[in-house]
Length: 386
Image 1: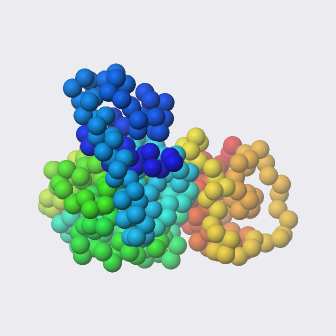
Image 2 (image 1 turned 90 degrees about the horizontal axis):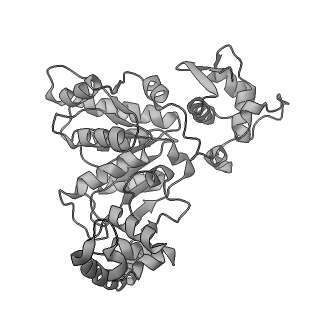
């Protein structure tokens, strides 16, 4: 019943994610919140006497909409995720106003914790489009899920770049209902994304792409990402709002790609760099800037690729796990055991472990972000002295 309760709350007129969370806390759970009376609501910060009766009535009205919404979603192949579900993004739970319900085409995976947002202008230059695609493909090759807003320009380029890599995953967050794809010409792109990742929205089915929806969409892009890269944006771009949210509201690092000084679309990234964003010129700038994975939300064994995605590792005996390796997956331990204090390149690790190159690169990325391994250059890695 939990999903039905959260959906009822999300369909209730007059309350958003912050008030919903306060009502749930005051009532002692989502089920009780759906039955909240005016007396309980009156004591919730931000509601008061005048609004409490309206919200109590709206809660009852929303209950009649739940079945219809679930039926429409089922017909469209859309699944719904609520905060009680194991697949609800852990990083998104940590923001001040997480979505009450996520509508989804595709799937979310535990490895999506390792994600980076790429945002920028809808009217981008050829340089911006090329760089968004290039960095998205590089991130995908390193096992990083690329998250963006599905818009024209930089967003679309980032999604396509991630899809260009054979193992790439990408997530698009829309500012409309999933049955109202926007921009409409990206309908086929969203279908491709759903096959290799997920298309998400917090808005009920049928919601048009209203202007006020996009700041809410942007906070999900930032909230699901461990960092945000701004590729091109003028000084009034929504991409800068996303970057500020990432830094100020969500505590995530912000990266910016420098551009031509005579291009107005370089003004946004250059301003961010002046304000302390990390200047990006290569993949290592992003991976190093992300820092260690948050220990409280990561379960390394969940990042294992599917069994049929890789060859079995070599049966050659390796050194037994050391204390520093506790908590790592079997595959990560195998790779770590074959590393030395001196640099070892990826080709050598592929040969030593009999694992496919893309799996070795992905696991090295996780080991690097967890602080067990340091990247010496693009293709060489070494153990850290732990």
